[in-house]
Structures are given as structure tokens and as C-alpha cells.
Length: 155
Image (cartoon, rainbow, N blue to C red; front, side):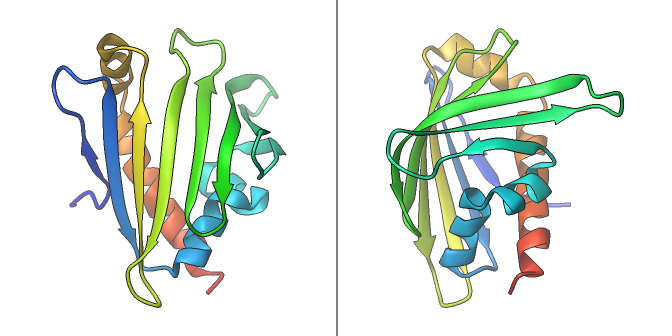
């Protein structure tokens, strides 16, 4: 099956470019990143905090059936322009991975379709390559497929 989310990671660079077109109006695509209830559904995690504003913060946490934390991430929102862009940091807690800077841009293509472009910058090429050794590409494609499925129900 073809992956709809395209990930471009050029050798020797400390960045990744991610692009995905969705069959969603741009307002609904943006809402999928801003509304904690929707984020929880497509990311499969709990949203502990989501402050959608400049200097706001967010925190996500996933637990197993016994209540043990298996994933926790947080960051600061540096810019939040509804239906257009989010600039934020992202840090996976209790991992060797350093903080990353994410530029998310939301673009309407038609009344019913839109594009998400993510530019993710890492501190070093080695740090970026460490992330790419994980099932990163498969994971983000799965998450975006899930986002499309969940948000389709809101149309």
C-alpha cells in the first residue's frame, strides 16, 4: 500500500520535510492538531495540556493497561495562527532524543482538500538520523491515515 505521507530526509542535513494532502477542508485539518479530543483520538494518547497560543504549552502521555507511562512528550507553542500554522518544540521525555523544532503549515487546496507541510529541525544530523532509525516513517503515515479517518466523521 502506498504511503500518502511523504517524508524527505536528505543525507547530511539535520531536518526532515513531511508533506501530506488530506481530503479535509483546511479548518478541519487544523482542528485535528488544535482540539485535544481529536488529538487524543488520532494520536492514541492522552492530552494532559493543550494551550493553543503563543508561549502556550502542551503535554501528551500514553499509558499501558496497568497505568504505566510508556510515552510522554511536551513542548512549547511559539506561534499559533488558526488554519495557517503552528510553530512548536517537541520533546519525548525519558528518551535520548533531543528537542526538535517543528514548523507546521496548513494550506487549503480546494474547499474540501488541504495540505500539511511539516519542516522538522534537529540539533544535529546524528540526532535526526537517530529518529529515522525508529519506525518513524511508518508511524507518521499511520497517524496521518488515522487523522483522516477520525476527522472524516466530523465532516
